[in-house]
Length: 342
Length: 277
Ligand SMILES: Cc1cc2nc3c(=O)[nH]c(=O)nc-3n(C[C@H](O)[C@H](O)[C@H](O)COP(=O)(O)OP(=O)(O)OC[C@H]3O[C@@H](n4cnc5c(N)ncnc54)[C@H](O)[C@@H]3O)c2cc1C
Ligand code: SF4
Ligand code: SF4
Ligand code: FES
Image (cartoon, rainbow over all chains, first blue to last red; front, side, top):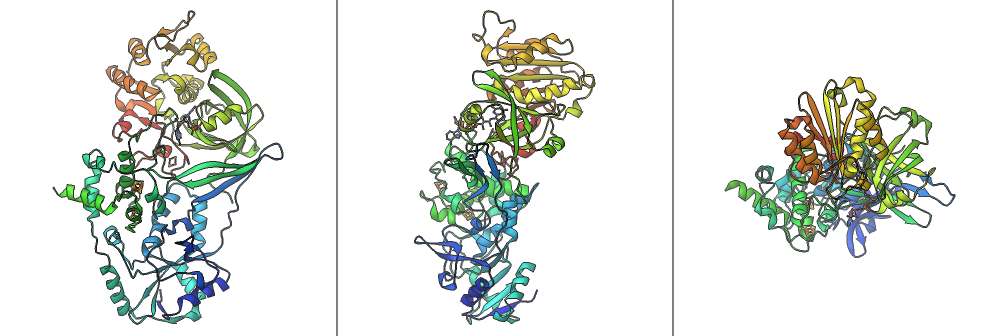
């Protein structure tokens, strides 16, 4: 695919052009004092010189809450309506590679065996313009899970700012090509590939944390029972890690009622909640907190990998950054990898 | 365009009280097309729902050989089951399914079958039992061992009477010590003990066991003693479920989706799973 170049001050024009073309544009924007992915009505609302949004981009294709049906009893017999399955053409502008990469990872769960059309239809309607990182912190470890701050996974187009300020426009998918063609006038044909390489190296050097994830997996594979798990007993089961995580995808199905009508909703849930697995009899297969935290780790680094061939983590570091008791997932993996060595 | 979580509408055509807190519902699809095309296999489950209360997982406890309706049998334990309890004949119930795997009834052909059930866990056994009885000449001996805590906790009492009268199935019914009534004519003792006394032959036989975890735990060694190898013992797992279709992450044991690869497992398959059920 042909690469292109965008002027250093071209991002606002790109956003405004997309809006003018009638697309729903989602970008990092201020929401209640936090940076979050949200719809913007002009480029002025987008914040693109940013590190990461507090919550990930997964909610664009897998919302925190969504109605799977509506019901109404006001006429006597209950009437049941499916939701509108029309999802607007959406372009995400400025997703970081660790956010973009979560989408193809989530494709596995939502399409294996049967499609969750609520996910797949949104996903089909969404085009992602990724943005290579310019900062990282000590919780970032994307390079340990096969990704990087300039990785194209999940992006349809990846923008990388070059030393001279211009953006290298890397067209990754057919969807990206289609969008790039529509935005033709904003882009200059061709791009400086060696400058792109240099910018990529610089970005990758930002991530200093490194964990041997495959070694850690080797240990996880045969240490379901181990004292190590009990040392994560400090986990509160608050679920914060799963809510900010771009790859956590457990959900609940609950009815929400207002008067005589209401909705059946698909809501985010968390395997670290104590009641996640409680049977109706009161029996709980994961009866203590470390078992619930263990599930989170094993699901990400062992089970999902065994089942779908990919690790359920993009190394974004959000879970570590937001854990109220300071559990650092890279440290958990370091401990596992360390135990494998000894 | 709809989606995988959209239920079919079913009408309650009959309600049968089994015990003070357990009830059977007979259900018929509202939509004629669905009524015609719907089929399932014994052991599969569904998500049954009350609009405004939510969904819950029950086994389809009728036999696939019965074409005009399906049945579920449930115990009132919480939010949705209480709402379901309040419904009346003619009311609507949502249904998604059939989901999960099933008892490989075809593989049981020409074999002796021992059905073992405890308490409310009779429903998953009852569907496959009727399935086999409806195709009676395809199988050899059929033995049923069914127990509950007390006489009033036995479900399908009217069917137990029918089994007792038939000479092509042998029924051993029991209640836990202290759970008997003066006119109780069955055994008194826990299911594993009664099973050991009944000692069905393991020769050319399979065993299907459903019951509370504690009953299963003590029944498996008895079956081993009787000579049943682990690959000929079938049971079902009841991990909590939400989606039923391998998405929501609720039912997982290691990389196994109980809602997909289960709920029916052999003892051999269960033994290699981590103890998360
Ligand atoms: C494959 C399968 C087959 C099944 N088949 C049958 C069947 O044939 N018949 C049958 O009766 N049941 C069956 N069950 C169990 C049945 O699904 C549950 O009993 C039912 O979903 C309970 O729903 P409820 O809304 O009434 O209970 P809930 O209100 O959800 O909860 C009931 C109980 O669960 C515990 N609990 C759940 N969530 C919480 C929470 N957030 N906080 C605290 N406690 C909680 C509590 O102990 C509570 O009393 C089956 C389950 C599975 C997985
Ligand atoms: S954020 Fe920390 S305390 Fe909360 S559930 Fe996750 S690991 Fe446990
Ligand atoms: S597990 Fe933690 S580091 Fe990995 S993707 Fe989720 S939030 Fe990011
Ligand atoms: S019940 Fe949702 S994954 Fe099995």
